[in-house]
Image (tube, rainbow, N blue to C red; front, side):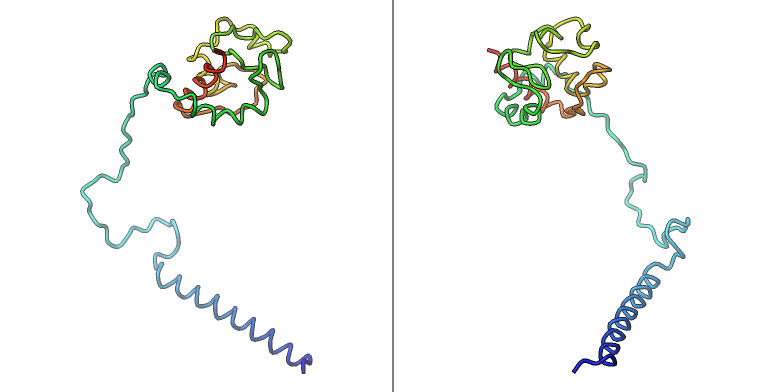
Length: 173
């Protein structure tokens, strides 16, 4: 049956096969990468000329004004984006959560929800929550209102912001 000599032979065979595998990998690597190492300044032996410069050309994409994106925004698509907001905000009038309620937020004065303790930055801001102002805040809350209590990182896609704002605007009607 199994004695110590048989067990030793099995373990030795496993180690020997692993060693052969590692040495085979090392030999194959040295055959295919003869440059002497990675990133040591060696150039490729043969370069195929494609007729293009090696520098990457970045075309300036003109930024579309938010008003144009908002004009074609979809409230139904914005409803799908509401889920992360629902963790802190409610859509019922007067029902504050961790954040102020967002029923009728489009067109409402900034920092004007009764019973909610705004950060001093938002409480002192002038003006209304226009779609453009909401877009700026949702893109980068900490950049728009430094010192805000909102910990959301921001919604970078302009179409997503427009859709979400269109959804919020449809709730306040």
